[in-house]
Amino acid sequence: MAIRLEKGQRINLEKGNGAKLTNFCVGCNWGAIVTSGGFLGFGKSTKAVDLDLSCIMFDANGQIIDHIYSPLYRPEFLSRYGMPMGKVDSLDRALHHSGDDLKGDQGGDDGLDNEIITVDLNRVNPNVNQIFFFLNNCGKEDFSQIPYASIRMYEGTPTHVKEVFASYDVAAMPQYKGMTALIMGKLYRRNGEWKFSAIGDAYPDANICETIKRIAANYAK
Ligand SMILES: [Ca+2]
Ligand SMILES: [Ca+2]
Image (tube, rainbow, N blue to C red):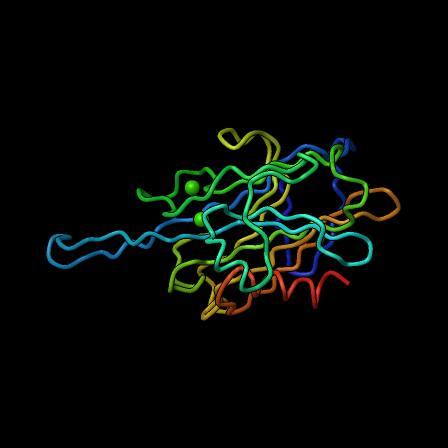
């Protein structure tokens, strides 16, 4: 049975059979906004929703030492905040992003995640102490307007979900009105073991750089 994560919950990365979860995917599934249109459905339209799943890594002192976010962010925008270019691989090659989805599911929920970060905990640089996963919405709408958006951890590949370990619903809830960024949770080391903490805090951040600065200032220390 998959764990339905609650805000603030901390979990061990241990499966039902006692084995450790070390290789898994963190994925986000979401849908485009479909407006029903008028008479006989004429005028029905689909509005693309561009969510971005990213992660940022900190050392034991709370300093940022690596990141994964979309290479499509413009360098001149990032440099205004002192942020480096986006990339899809961590420096240690332990984490990999499937690529920036700009639209969301167009024909209803396809059951697959639109952006996925694969994780191999055995390959993570020993200096990485915390890995935060977060979502930003690049469009004008807020999370409450998106028909569905959920984040989950599962075993398998980006195109094949073998077993869901934990899941977390993000959208279509009144408390997400006006919110454009969500700090989903963090993987962190304790006494040599990885654990996961579900954070679930939403903010009206204007862009990814504001969210990264917020995590560094308020969550990583
Ligand atoms: Ca995206
Ligand atoms: Ca999908």
